[in-house]
Length: 362
Image 1: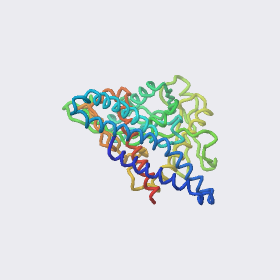
Image 2 (image 1 turned 90 degrees about the vertical axis):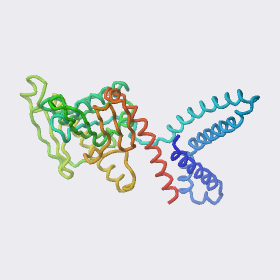
Image 3 (image 1 turned 60 degrees about the vertical axis):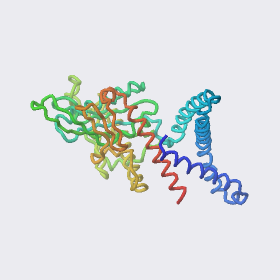
Image 4 (image 1 turned 90 degrees about the horizontal axis):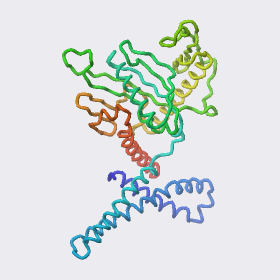
């Protein structure tokens, strides 16, 4: 476990002891609201602190056993003690990582995944197609369903833009760190001189908002246009104005949907995506105001964010947010995204713990 995480856990342990003293003070009962707030914080830190104490005890046992390795009579017993406690440490660290994960009410939700080609022309569109395939494979490995809402194909393959709904338990919780800019470095098939091209695409991941929590949108703020669908679909797409484009005038957010044959269904889907985008923008603005100095692993989906570089020449992927480089590009492009996501989650936990410590000390 990283020293920075250990230091933050020690700080939280101190806070836990401090809360015990506060809650044991009879005078605290005079302020019921403060008592309730501190009791909730105490309950949140309880399991984490007890788990960390077990980790500290196991580490102490290993240290004690190591001092006995030079004693011939105790050597074998010490080795067994070290092995047993090292196994405990591994299990406890897994528990700590789970307990450290901030509780996000949206983590269990379905989500919307939007991929757009950026700089690089046709090569960027091809890369966007590769990205969508990667996320589709990852969804399959988690037994999720992907429902395409709208797509705009590239002239030579891939997508200029594709929007999909990812349906499955904890889809947003797994994919929320993917928002931001993704860059690819490779030699395109059309390149005759073997030059490496750099292209990019942007990814935005937003939780699906439950119907009861949908933000109120004034119908007068919407401009709704209908048009004929494009792409595959037979005669129907050429004869029916079933596709829907909705523009939210105050924010200029535009959403299109042409996946369904029914104009009514397309409108319902488009409104759902629109609500998710508006809510995501509100949350992003709030997060920026509250922690503008803090590194943000939850990207906004803007092109200015730079999440990763996928270097096909050297078979490596670099996540710039956490300075992680893996030479396992093929596995990742086949959908093994947990190789990256698990490391990002650990860093995110550490950042959230630091934020909690700052709030406690302020």
